[in-house]
Figure 1 (cartoon, rainbow, N blue to C red):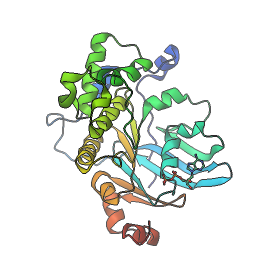
Figure 2: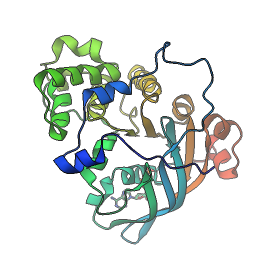
Figure 3: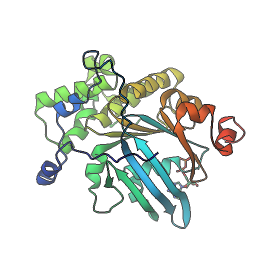
Figure 4: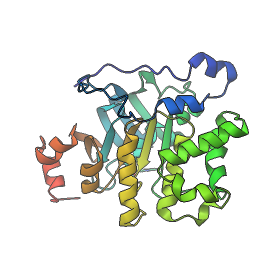
Length: 299
Ligand code: ADP
């Protein structure tokens, strides 16, 4: 189904261009806080979700090797979209185009359209620094900086905008709370982030991504290096964050995709085979290849 692309209004484009740096304020993050009982209406919201990321005939290459073939995909706003498929089918390649991480790979190029909130992000004139503020990334292995817990959050946020000390403290607390790790670290913010467990480090990295006020969070197998308990905590966090962020998760774990996502896209050999609401894709796949994959016949 085609949906109208969204336009992004916050922060103000003019302000960004004028200052030359992306602008983030704590209030704009706080405004995106989850709905509380008071703010939730009893009437079910039947408005169809807006599209945040959209591709049309999007293909990509590493040199002569075509890794993605004419993808047409609409990723809805404030939902979790899981990208599944066997190893090497192009899931990470696709994810990396969304924040232009492939730009640094020699020979990597794309054709076709990819838009974020209606804006063409494949255009070389698009400001990549602004894109990476709008689109945060969380990797397979937690990668905190060798700095204090506080600095891990403050450092990146301060690169985008200079905060006063008290605003920074507020932002750090807010980000750590959103990433469900505040209670575990609030008494040791000056300690090294490297002393945290793997699961805590991953939640810290999510907090770090949140601190710059993104609209989209990309996660490339965020649980694959974690023990089952830490994975469960990250899964729960992903579910709660979807109230405020558009989340795209690559996972090779189908049970995980079924648990955490609203929409699932099945990739195979660089082709997008099928996209549907997660429950439908796993119970009534339209394509035989999807059926074969989810029932474990290959992959
Ligand atoms: P997945 O995430 O589904 O495992 P990838 O996106 O990592 O798949 O890889 C898709 C294809 O692109 C694979 O054939 C892989 O070998 C190839 N590929 C990935 N990264 C590079 C690269 N930097 N250079 C050349 N080929 C690459």
